[in-house]
Length: 274
Image (cartoon, rainbow, N blue to C red; front, side, top):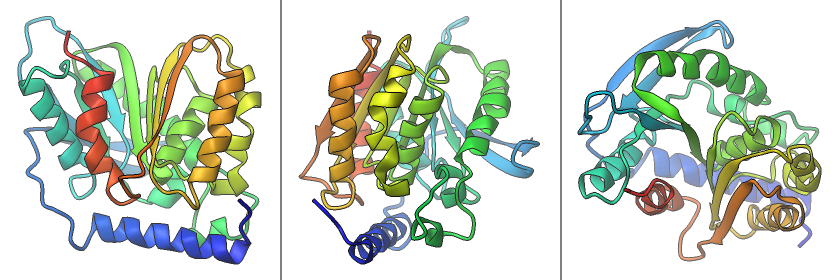
């Protein structure tokens, strides 16, 4: 399907407006499970970042846990409903105990987007294209802090939706060893004219030794769907043997509902109770 840029920009703004409405006005209040919070004075980002950490409810002496790093991880963002989904599943015996690390936003659209040559992309925020620095912050400052403080094992996952889903896929493309599990929900692969998805055969070929899992679910058909199809074609032809991947269309959901609907379903499936 071919879009004019004027149509594409209108759809883009509709998606962003929908996300803001879902995140602010009318958002259901979810009580956050017990957690701890701290701040990092980031030298990489030159700012203070707030981090929220959920620990599993039952912890045996010496037991160590996988870590799921979640974007949009503030208390006023997606941390409460994701932590609740995990806590509920663990207590019900449907999910292995994990540690959830929520990264609260400061400039979301800056941190979640890579560079772009598309002028319309640069209109969504005063500053965009900061994904490489944000990833450096996670790798050099946040992960070492978490691993020095909490009883973690060697397994690391990352989850994100919309622009955060774009960041998840871009991270897989450039730093596939940073995590072993990548969960992207309705990722905004339209960014930079869809080049990340179109270039999948190239960047997949560069990482033949990869050992990771990718779960991708999508709902929005007009702006996101075509680029999901492009990425899926690349995965079908070029995915390394060590990359386990799944792409799921959820036409019953929308861009605004996909995260809350799928978190209680996908996370226990990716981290099943043994």
